[in-house]
Amino acid sequence: MRKSGRQLFAGPYLIWIIGFILLPLAMIIYYAFTTSGGTFTFENVAAIADPVHVRSILLSLKLGIICTIVCLLLAYPLAMILNGLKIKQQNFVVFIFILPMWMNFMLRILAWRLLLSNNGIVNAIFQFFGFGTVKMLNTQTAVVFGMVYDFLPFMILPIYNSMARIKNDVIEAAKDLGASDAIILFKIIIPLTLSGIISGIIMVFVPALTSFVISDLLGGGKVLLIGNVIEQEFMQGTNWNLGSGLSVVLMIFVIASMALMNIFDKDGGGTAVW
Image (cartoon, rainbow, N blue to C red; front, side):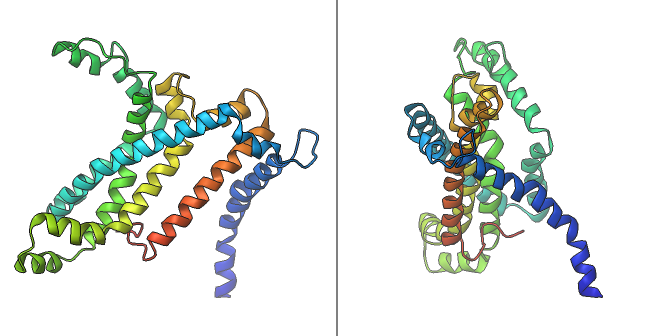
């Protein structure tokens, strides 16, 4: 009876997976390898080689890599600061980083659209210090800024989780043996937090690569990422076959990224619940 009861409780979860994950995925794969008439074809997937699509995916890779690097450079020292604080302070500061994620995604990006506009607060500060008006909105810089703002917590949390697993005895032993702060950082802390770094990179790079809303709102249609191309094929051109074919290519990137994470993060050090 107990086993049957557990299976019964799993029913809604299985229905959710089938209805909202497996069936949509099956539809995408079907449309990706068929024409509008239903015949089998590879043209939709091969369309990624089109010059327009190549430029879009290269730009997506470029901005995704820049966003990931910036997030890593910001997140690692922040994670070290968090790890060095007292327990109560740690919980509060981590809460501060997570708090923006509780707000609606669109509202947060629209708020930055106002802040980065020519008449926004950021330009008002520049003008106050005599720098004049700086065009930031509808540029690649604005898109990267929005990505970093939105995805930074996904880099901080796994790195912080890995650092929290390092025992103080290891650091103290290294100091007793005469190791400098630089040696402790590069020989002990970074190697022991590599799993968190890899997890953070994947958790930031994958959504940055597939993002389209941020580039729509902060790029003003002038920054065309591969996600924007796919969105236009589905919503404007109503070409589900081509949009699905390009989506399959993006899924290959995601699957490759997940496989890479599993190779470098075998112990789950960067993704375990802390």
